[in-house]
Length: 194
Image (cartoon, rainbow, N blue to C red; front, side, top):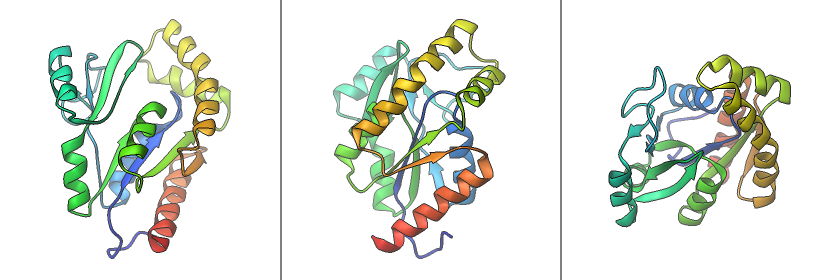
């Protein structure tokens, strides 16, 4: 599918809670010659998350300082916490023809599309609402109240993603292996047309 002659790209992966974004991103980094963009966040680390691997956990002041310097490719507030993708690593990856994967929300994807029109944007869909609920519950990281809030928000996110017209492709994440293969196949097909 992916071959050595293909140039790198910015690949955005978005989707509602519980759709498997993080798992898909990790697998794509393993399968492609790709790296994961480490976002900044002002929230605390969840159990098992590692500094500079999952996120860079920063103070409000640090976040605001980089934002004021136009140092984010995109940034947003989600569930009362701030998230942002630092611009410098993306510019470096582009200049070196490396593929970098961003796991960001819809508003972030819109910002990335404006700044990087050549980026590849994908949105993951759950196979069913029941499967999405099961995946969120099995993470054991959120309270029942938080799970209910995330599930209630999911339908609106999916509609909004479709309405924005910003995404190049939508993939239903039935299972990790198939979804990763489908995304690789799609990237290879668009790389040969570009």
